[in-house]
Image (cartoon, helix red, strand yellow):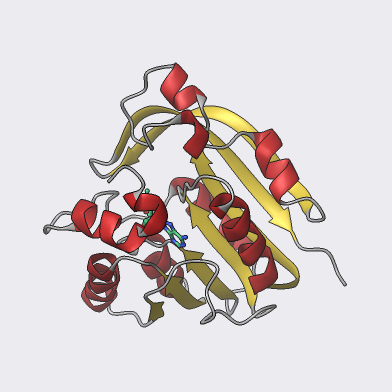
Length: 212
Ligand SMILES: C[S@@+](CC[C@H](N)C(=O)[O-])C[C@H]1O[C@@H](n2cnc3c(N)ncnc32)[C@H](O)[C@@H]1O
């Protein structure tokens, strides 16, 4: 049972997302909303990986970005579609996990990856697939918890085990070959639904895929 999220993230997250509430709220992640408008053109093609209940994907579609939302949970994908309908926007929703055969390589200007935590080797595979999905010059925008989240006994969310989280050094290695325009560990105050609330130890990254 303890390996279920690793083997079947869709079923694991189905349970977490079941119910009317949006676990991380309906507003986008603050870092994503802050940096995307300055990073990309209004017509950019954006892929939100592990989009959960769609807070980032639906916000991206509202900005006018051509948005694809990829999420393994059936419950999550239903809620993404419901949120898009509620807010009157369209986006492509794919129920799958990364790496995904449904995702074209070199197709996207941006990959958004917030709080998608997985153990090795899955973590590296997800990160490599995100880089492959980008066109040359495209960017990955990532936020996630660092192991300090557990060491500091934070109650603002995240997986139970430190090894499921990542440091800036781990990301530097996973995204080697990309130009790291931002890579920073910090403590922030999260206010993202009931799932992420309070002081949190996170890492933020903007990684640009170099020209071939
Ligand atoms: C903590 S939730 C974050 C959801 C969303 N990114 C957000 O910030 O609101 C983690 C998400 O990662 C997704 N996930 C887990 N493994 C994945 C994989 N291999 N590929 C894509 N998504 C995955 C889960 O289904 C879940 O929706």
